[in-house]
Image (cartoon, rainbow, N blue to C red; front, side, top):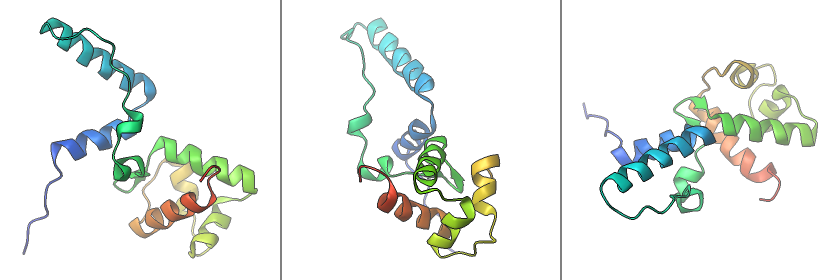
Length: 131
């Protein structure tokens, strides 16, 4: 039996960064800036590296089996624009329209099957404005 490879600390940080709110991100950057000033390094303000994230980190829509808050907002935006219900989205993804798992994930932040998360990533890429 092979052991599952542990994620690197960098992958963990990127995952936590994408899950953090903008206030938490700014608090972290302020902390890092204060630490560097205390060590006598450059005291310039650190800006959020939104555009420096690798493609795979920027494409993260879930933390494990749970949708990120930003992903929930993106899904709801597309649903409003296209006048869809969660059951309609599930049908578009190729799952049963009676499957209420997306409804629960959006409303109560419950877990989703990994196959649904993968299908949602493709669906968002196809239907999100500006892509």
